[in-house]
Amino acid sequence: MTGGAMFSKARLDTLLDGIFAVAMTLLVLDLRLPEEFQPHTGGELLGAIGGLWPKFLPYVVSFWVLGLRWLGIVELRSRAEYLSRDFANYLLVYLLLITCVPFTTMVVGRYAYLAPAIWLYAGHTFIIALISLRMIAITPHLEAGDHLHRRQLSGTLLALSSLMAVALSFVTPRYAMWAFILTATQPIVERSRRHAAGEV
Image (cartoon, rainbow, N blue to C red; front, side, top):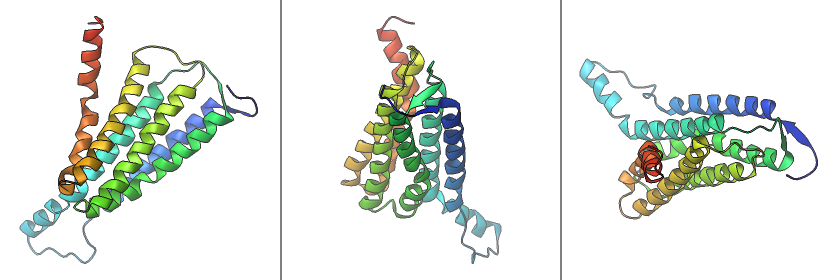
């Protein structure tokens, strides 16, 4: 670990929890009906709500991605009470990226049929995955175990999903966001890994 200033892990965790809570809440703000919309029948209202579907998928994906990122950090076990400036700097970059998720979600929710919107969102999540994996590597006094494997697998699946989404955007941008379903396979991959290692 590098020398210099040290930062309380408890205080950094508090900052992290707060930013994740705000970012996850802000995601829903783009899921709204136009202010000028005045339905005259229940059918019109249902139709308008159904029309939000293109925005709903990115919302669910982003909430899932943020939820997994937060759970991974909470689950990761370190005996260190203080963390280096190097780690704190990576954490700040990581949190900056987290605060931008509502913006990239809004863009892809509105323009998912355009490849650049996919590139923006998937590039963003790819960098989040890389920073997450880097933070694992520099976290001091990590306790080994399944929790560590899950965190590494989660970051790897997010990176792969992001790359798949970019690749799909060159063929069919409208369906590229479905690449993020790969992140939901983590429990299956984890069970397969344990089975192969003879742990089940």
